[in-house]
Image 1 (spheres, rainbow, N blue to C red):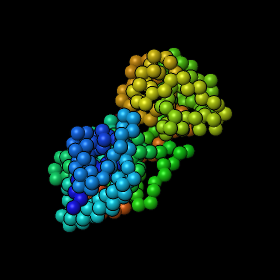
Image 2 (cartoon, one colour):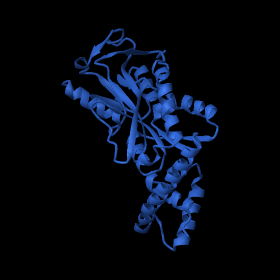
Image 3 (cartoon, one colour):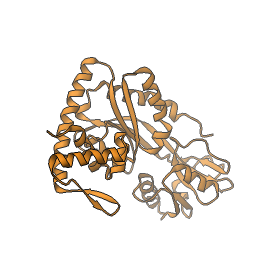
Length: 305
């Protein structure tokens, strides 16, 4: 008989793309995940992973097992949901994926609140980009995701996934002190031509928003420095190396040498909670979404300095 935990390990490798990433998501060591899959290979007498460069890829037989694993995990999820509904209290493990600034600026308070009020709930956090976490929710790799999108780049949500709005995160222009925009009450998008920009890499939502918005205003952005993390972008601005547009969530206090200037109109990104339709009845899901919404106004109102 196939072991569900071993199937879960294989499924996690399929979703996350590597043994190491699967181990981080499951809360295991990479060695433990490899051992689970090795045991599954012996049970099935089938090779499931093949070396590919420094990583691994799934064999055709493994992909077939992953499809079966998704069906079995969905059945288990329904059973767990029904039991939790009957108990009427948030309980059991709840895996939450959140993008970096939400993981830093929103989730610590939410998780601490849940831990105090619902000791039977074992909430666990994974940091991941929204374009990745949507698929993780749909495939059952995580129970809940905190994601975001921008007005000109809506985040697609697949069938079988439900969502609820958490709130709106305002974005502002950051410039070096001494820049002509520093001290302005407001700057229009049409005035942003000719600036040297620091921004996240292509493929990230913030990068796509910047390029589309400036082109719509008649400017081709000159992106001179790229970095994944917002604190790095802020440090580059503080060094006088460019300007950037950054959401306020998780940004923290601005260092010396950086001035914040409102843009007209103000860019906003909207935060959502996502979960599978089959898990919608879990009290843990409902309570976590409620707590996210409850904490958001206080987080959004935090001063920048």
